[in-house]
Length: 80
Image (cartoon, rainbow, N blue to C red; front, side, top):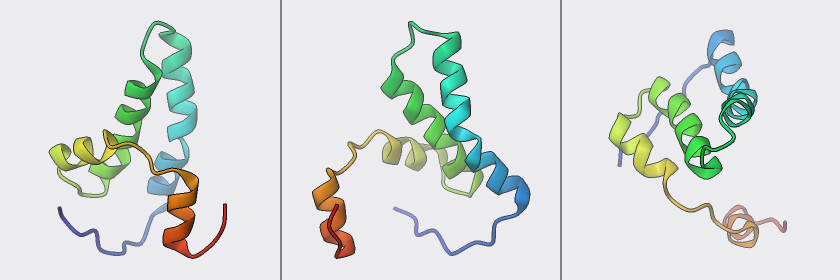
């Protein structure tokens, strides 16, 4: 898996990432029959590809299950 280097975001990139949640809401609103988890994965892939991750790798990352909150907190050394 590729390593992403720290990048400096432009206002345009920040706006793109910030717009992901409303974009997902619009997709699901306009297509109520669409599977919500698949739509969320697709919307999550877009910023990863925009920041240089290859499409197949972005797809693989976004299809993995999310860790539970306790596991994520343990990795950060905090409690949920």
